[in-house]
Image 1: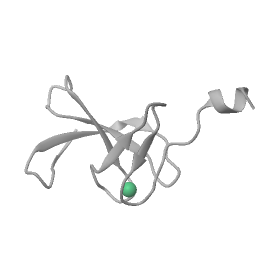
Image 2: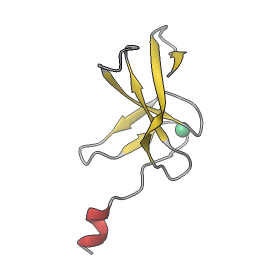
Image 3: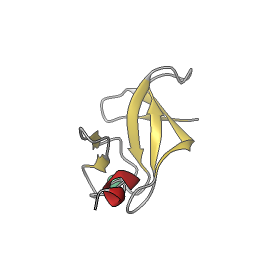
Length: 79
Ligand SMILES: [Zn+2]
């Protein structure tokens, strides 16, 4: 995993082999520790920021470049 430091000085670990597909680039899974036990959130692969948020539907959105995970199959099935 790649170690990276946030604006707050916290070290986080990016797993580039796991994540979600986004509209602009993938979101990668981020862990708070090297052991991959503490899931921290997601990292935007488009503008390379940790500034992302997940809504109650489980969609991930980047707060900087508006990259967002694509609608899942649930939406298509209930059209
Ligand atoms: Zn972004």
